[in-house]
Image (cartoon, rainbow, N blue to C red; front, side, top):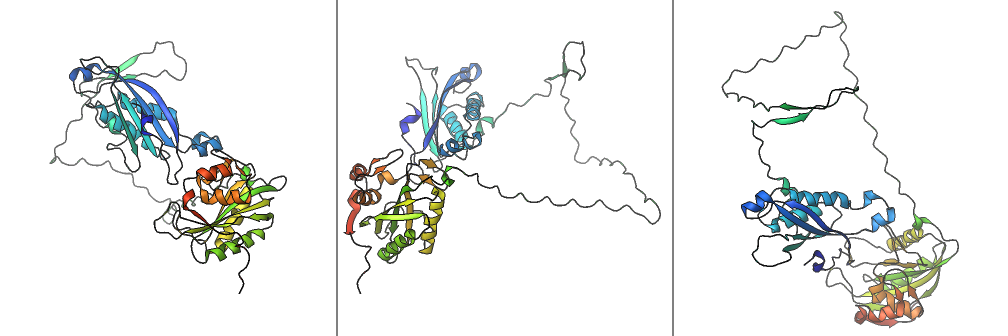
Length: 410
């Protein structure tokens, strides 16, 4: 049994998290219920799988954004060699606690191997495997392997190495043995020890007294760091095709979407050239009992940078009363950038192509209607028609209107 037997872990948006695996960490430990196991010790092995989002580190290529597995490996070995436990179940919990101590880790799988367990039968290994996450945390603290330490006896000498002098010396390096001298206890009713007298400082003369030193000036607060521009701030050399997904399930949704298309068409640097039929779909994710959504796809060309387009779409959302109070909750208007040319990129505020477009029929089917030969780029992409035919929510979509953009007659 290995940690991978537990299967994948997803984040709050349904995205499968990445994995950092430490396999075969080995050390001599003193865990077990028998005295011989605690006195002689034996080899233990640990496999650890940490479920994290590695994309921020991949984008920055900076160790500060990554999980430092070298440090984690040292911490796991410290558990294996640390305070003896009777059960390897306890050892597994301690390792899980160490893994989840890293804020970026959302879940951790641990397998502790005891291949030399004292069993009078032929076997190859004994393994205890656990999964712990933020909702199901470990039952021991991360520093439990340091909880118990053997007391140092007062009579035991402590060896203190003598450092070489700064200037060269011919004498060989020796070690001095300094006995630890216990401090005699003080009786509670013993008379207090008088404090040493403090010197009295006289003024410089009869009228002049030194002024107190000036208070240090407060240090200025550091200015907020500016975001480093990335490729999502780069404008294309020529107009590129973009795909926008519109949705609404609050208010007069059809009128909202019609107004949103008009607002997008008026954005400088964005030219709308096709709009899909209007579709009614059941809400996917979010709170139960939401009204159905009306959805449409807008095809356009733009000379804006991806992040400029994001800000433009957010402005259109705000102009139509969009309030972001609940994740995947009801909303007056939602405008998502599904695809921006062939750009594949990730940042904290924008991911291209949209990470869930490949599994959303309310995006794929309207898109295929307006562009049957469309192809979704990126991981999980492919021909849009084929993706629409297998989308998990395809049965919840109903067509409503082809000419829904035309104004209603009075």
